[in-house]
Image (cartoon, rainbow, N blue to C red):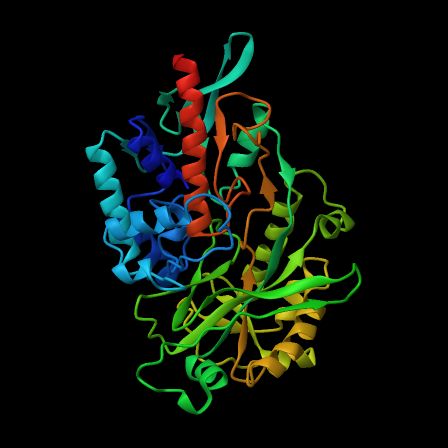
Length: 441
């Protein structure tokens, strides 16, 4: 969202400074090795933080339900202009691949630098600067961890759904925050050949068929009422990766390369969390959902045994309500610890396991083998979307409470992936441009 906002501003001749706590994409790769090979988390440079945000080392899915918002085609064409494969312009479900995305992002940055946009990476923002402006409070810039202050006529906050220290920073200057629904669950992994057989039947293995994908959803009943259980960010021929941003938690996510040639298929399998669910746990305030996420992430780290090993259970054992003593081979490099994922989910205080069991029975009838002993549940998938929203004026897109602040993208609660984040970044830039023109007049 931030990169597309800077891009749209540049197209209209508006200078900006892009600030990111993480590193440029090539240097960021080395920190990812620390996650996968050594089980160590750099809180400022990981799968979520750094140039391009969480999207850089996802697998670059370019489809969205936000077709009624903004110019989706513009977002895709900008990617193609900067080196993404041309077929994303015509594919119904376009995909770039995490091996290609870094080059695309580098090309976008280099173009923007040539147009006068300044990049500060790594540079962690630790405070927002507020001043009185014509009798009203206005955000005038940011203070960095090294003590420097960057000033400007407006500040766009486009920090993604995992920058948990940013929301208190906003609240401290009087910006309104509110809780929002999100989802919690696990990653489910299968041999890709199993998914191919379930989807393609006798044609499975044909060289002209791509690795098969799926999309599943079911509404379950349990104490608290009906809740959706659904697949999320399905990665055919992909990998499960460690997406933790804090050293005491385990978080998993999925990605795939452009070839999608891993022998594994994985997907988030998550349960919708409503505001009533969080309130029933006695958690209050706009950060209540963050506290729930932390609970389950810490429980996953403890069950995994350290070094970012992830707790895992065969689906057949999970359905039987027991721990696994062994688990299948997995794409997750830090390694799996055979255990009872149901106990990890119980740390949430919600009937997540019961809802997942009910949905798995339904999904097995839809995709044969989905709930077999070859399938494994890996915990936890907790960063599906932001549990916090930063309300903004519907006409100006400015945050509520302090002038000059523009919340954007996933961390503000207005996007859920590369495409919708790009669209929102462009929309915020257009609103900001209108504001700056009015100031000049």
